[in-house]
Length: 57
Image 1: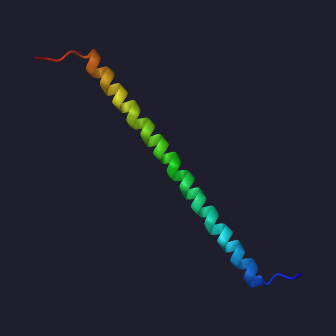
Image 2: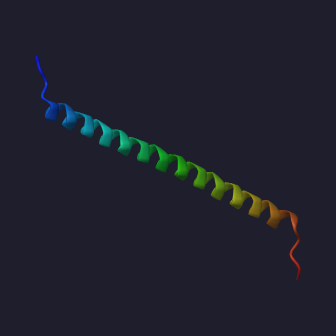
Image 3: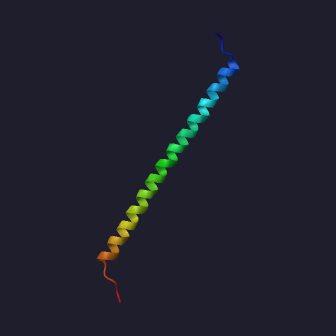
């Protein structure tokens, strides 16, 4: 049962590429979650500031 070096290299490269895609997908998801959290926090702070600070008319 011998596996050719080419076949072993091909399988290794395929696994390496798929792993790279997974890392990029996880990083993208993490950035999206953080960006959404920052946006929600900014909107909340803006709403509180609008409610606390009286309008100058």
